[in-house]
Amino acid sequence: MAALLKVEEIEEELADTIGGCEGCDTPIFEDTPHFTYGDDVTVCAECAPTLSSILADYRQALSLRNPDYESFGCSSLEEFKHKAEACERDLKENGDRKLLTSYGEAKS
Image (cartoon, rainbow, N blue to C red; front, side, top):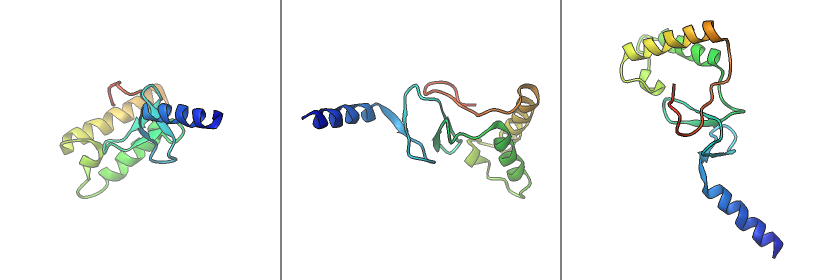
């Protein structure tokens, strides 16, 4: 009986998730720090990228003849370049760190 109650408790907790980490399948709850990529892939804090790794992704994409800016959540090449420049400024001004938000906060 105790095991059944524990299973029900776990099922109730999992019902409150907003999804799972694409990297390790960890459940992500409403207030759990996480990162959502431009193409709506969400990862937990442990799997979240650093600012420098996102900047490296921007630079790699910009080196291509036709960058896939839509996969970064941008609607134009100009917006994509602006976000890459903002990322570079942020790294210079604030240093490297994991990029994390909680559900409901504005995405960067």
